[in-house]
Image 1: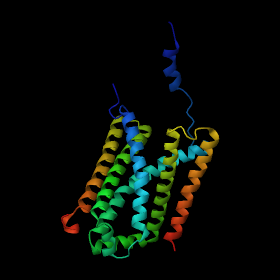
Image 2 (image 1 turned 90 degrees about the vertical axis):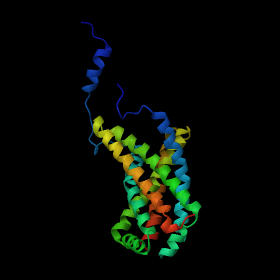
Image 3 (image 1 turned 60 degrees about the vertical axis):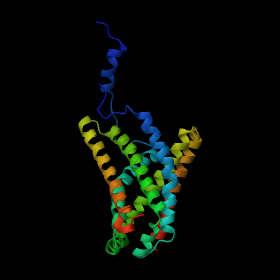
Image 4 (image 1 turned 120 degrees about the vertical axis):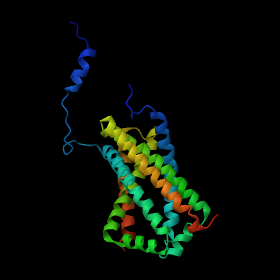
Length: 119
Length: 136
């Protein structure tokens, strides 16, 4: 029987990890420079950086790609170091909950109508 | 009773001497790049929810923004940010090297070694530059 949390979809995840890696290698330094180049010291200035709808969509897509990338990487680490299948399953699930939770939370803030108005 | 390699092998494998004294294993430089790639990735995974939380709080209003600004000003947070900067820079450069290796570029020993050293230096350089910005 196959292990319940083994690597039986390895090639797909491997490709996903590489594709998201390329995307993140472009998007994260780009976003970092955009936010840090003229770092505002007050709230209105900070908020105005996120005002453009495109910026918020790009951030959410980037963090979603980051979550998939982190899931693939943490899955590799857990498959290598955590031998008991039950414990490994619990930890992989915890990783998924943490990452999915983070993305959902970010989406809620970035598209909160009380902060940005209805676009 | 007939004994062939297939009946003997699993038993022999399970009784192999295991030598895992991490302090005495000699890693080649590409091995260091590799294990640090993993370590930095794990670190970035742990930091991601904190980052999302900080971003959310900083955007939630005037008061939240000031709280995040205060935290970031604290010396401990600066050290934490510096470690994360190294983790990100190293993970990025080691990852790009990995993609190059996937494309069969730089697989020979000399280039693999040189690119490993370049990754370590580039990660350190970005961290130093950021430290200069952070602590001045």
